[in-house]
Length: 355
Image (cartoon, rainbow, N blue to C red):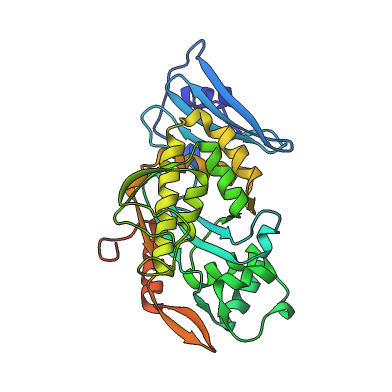
C-alpha cells in the first residue's frame, strides 16, 4: 500500500490502483522524488476479529490504514506540505450515553446523554451539540426515525414521548433515526456506551483534566466540584456527567457539562500521541456499541487526535421546560433547531451569529 502511493507520487505513470480517488484529487499537485529507500515505521493493532488498523510513519509523512480482511487501504494521509486528508468532510458522529448500570443491557435502557459531534479536520474546527435527554419527540418524528433506522412501523409507541425513553424499546438505531429527522444532518453513525464502558474508557486514559466556571454541588452524600481546574478520576467524571438537580439549568446544564467532558477527554487522549491510536481504537470498540465500520471509526479517531479541542464549540440545543400529560419535558426551539442544523450541514462549523 505504501509503495503504491509513493511510486504514484514520484511518477504518475504508475497506476496507484489502491489509492482512494479522493486522496488522488487531494494530492494532485504533490510530487515527491523517487528515492531508493524511505524509512518506514508502523504501529499496527488488531481492533476487531480479523480487522487491523495502522499508523504509518514515512519520513515526516503520516498514513492511516485499515485492513478489514480484504487487504490494506489508506483511510487518511498527511503527505509533504498537503493538509491532512480524511475523506469527505465534515464528519458527523452521534454519541449516546446509556443509563444502564453494570450488568444491565446498555443498548436497551434510557439514554442519559445525547450529542452530535461535527468535525472539520482540515479547518481544525467543529461543534458539539448536546440535546436535553427529556426532549419531546412527536409521533411523526418517531415514525420517520423508524424509517431511517429500518425498524418495523408496527413497533411504534402511541402518542409522543421523551427522547431518552425511545432507546429502551428500540435501541440506538431509533435514537440515530430521530437525530437524522430532527437535524437533517448526514450523520455517519452512532457510538454508545453505558456507565461501565464510560468509566473503563476513562480509566484506560487515566482520568481527565477539566476546568469548571463555577462550583457544582453533587448532592448531600457526594463531594462537590469546586470552580477552576481540577483532575477527575473516571468515577468522579461519571458523577459530574450525571448531575442535573443541583445545578442551575438542569437538563440543559448537564448536557453542556457532558460536552465539556468530551472535550477534556479529547485533550487527554492527545497527550498519548498519535502512535497510541490503534490501542485506543481497540479499547473504544471493546467498551462501546457502534454501527460504524472500522474505517469510519479510524477516521473519527484520527480527527479527534489531531484537532485542537479549544477550536470546537460546545452548545446545547435551545428549548424550554414544559409539562405534558403530567410529565416534565423539554420542547426544543424549532426555529433554532432548524437554523443551527442548516448552519452545520455544509462544514460542521457554527457561524458567529449562532456561536
